[in-house]
Length: 147
Image 1 (cartoon, rainbow, N blue to C red):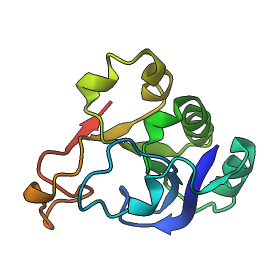
Image 2 (tube, one colour; image 1 turned 120 degrees about the horizontal axis):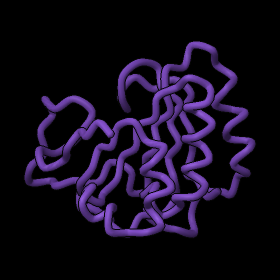
Image 3 (cartoon, rainbow, N blue to C red; image 1 turned 90 degrees about the vertical axis):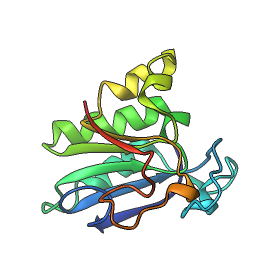
Image 4 (cartoon, helix red, strand yellow; image 1 turned 120 degrees about the vertical axis):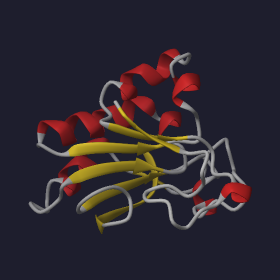
């Protein structure tokens, strides 16, 4: 799996203490994105999914897994494996995407990951609609969707 990095103890990427995987590669390249280093699909590093799963399970205080980017739906199979392992370990799964849920529902490759997500934060970051008062999202067009 190509990732930019992981965080073991985030409190800003969903509720509770989160293990966060920043996937590498993003077709959206939203102006003002807070993770522009994740846009290049050739950047980052390749790490076996099994290694990421083992890393995720190290902290017994972790409440959930957050998949973000880059764009997790560029690697739906690997992200689905991570999400499945997280749920099997009793963790909840949040996923941030620049796509809308409606667009993802038309993409056959997205279904494998959608089935493993508890909460989807969808929509591209819109710098003109930035709102620092929003919890867990950056612009007013983005939605928090409980799947």
